[in-house]
Amino acid sequence: MNPSSNNYDEKIITKAKNTVESYLVNNYQNINEIEFSDDTNDPMGGLMISGTINNEVGFSASVDPEKFVVKSLGTDEGFPPKKEECEGKVCDY
Image 1: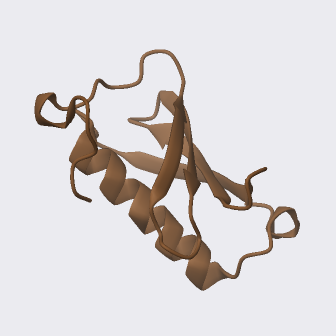
Image 2: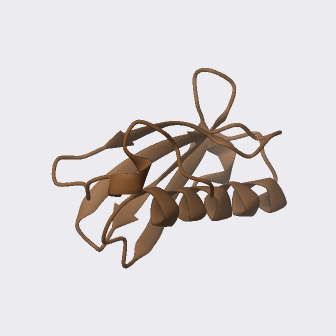
């Protein structure tokens, strides 16, 4: 983490990471381990949380730092598929 690359305090960053973790576990299959690597401001004024799933596949999630919802998710090739019940929608997280 590079604290100089964002404008958010540790409490907000921790809450955003918890939001991303819950989102991933509740919406995607086979999420066994999540490792966070970086947090920065995103271009749309949110907080970008990056990391790795299951020690192999990267992701970046844009989180609204006021509502603590995942606004968007970018994934590397090989990212686990969405859970069947979450296809076409976002499951609660």
